[in-house]
Image (tube, rainbow, N blue to C red; front, top):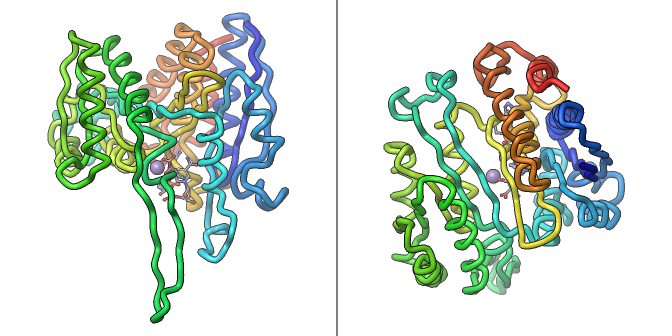
Length: 355
Ligand code: NAD
Ligand code: IPM
Ligand code: MN
């Protein structure tokens, strides 16, 4: 097949891991006889520097007209001054909402060869295999009003709004139930319904959607208790569906179970148009430019791009198997306790993919 893939490397280690993932896509295209065309555009801090805008129109337009978008990471200390008007992260949020990719799939799977890397005991993490479905274009990230103001008596006030419509909850819940059908038939909905009105609506709508999926088990869990359960008994989770910020926090926590933040990929999907594929980690300014970033999260995001973006499940599987084998054979960056560089790991994966 022919596919147009837009690359948005972004900031910090973003370019290092994005081009690693591209190399793997080139290898898989070679092996299966596909023609993938790549074009890179600016997003985030580099786009602010070059165009004064974290999501320039040319970038968004290219992304929207592509078959799939592969993003690295945005942000960094250069753009962290709170007085700055335009932030790199705004570019990413506008891209997600502009592409209407409301469901962010974040799989967390523990490879046996890495089970000893987690600070948790081996037996606690072995067999963990879950899919977190994070709502991505609503909730407290996007609710209005959102502002800061000076108070007349001195001091300041800042406001963020956690807002959901039933429609926003319904579509992401459906996505979670559909995914559970192809897995272990269990959905855990995570909310804060003992405190938040938006969570009570969330829970009600998820219950309504569950009626359409009689073969599946649904449980509700409060987010604080879910955070604990994730450490105590992560293997009991199959599909988790949750609000935007809860999902953001719980998946960084879940990365500890897998062994490193650098391992986890994601796919952001909507009802139509291209999907957005990105590792869940950030621009890692502390290691940027050193050639030691773990490219596996980005490479596994490229596998998700094949599976969910281009409907090429076999190609996805080949990439995932190559990653697992390469890491098991010792191709490990510093975060996994190894000495390999980004290029070493990428080369090992490319070799196993063949092509
Ligand atoms: P981070 O994810 O960038 O880094 C956290 C820690 O994990 C660091 O010690 C880093 O070195 C390590 N790490 C992350 N990815 C790694 C990899 N692939 N290989 C090896 N080690 C890795 O989080 P942070 O430091 O809180 O954020 C830095 C910047 O990134 C901020 O500006 C933040 O807004 C941004 N950010 C962007 C995204 C995104 O673009 N999707 C996600 C998270 C954070
Ligand atoms: C992520 C990041 C982003 C988020 C930031 C950079 C806007 O943490 O992709 O997990 O909070 O969604
Ligand atoms: Mn995050």
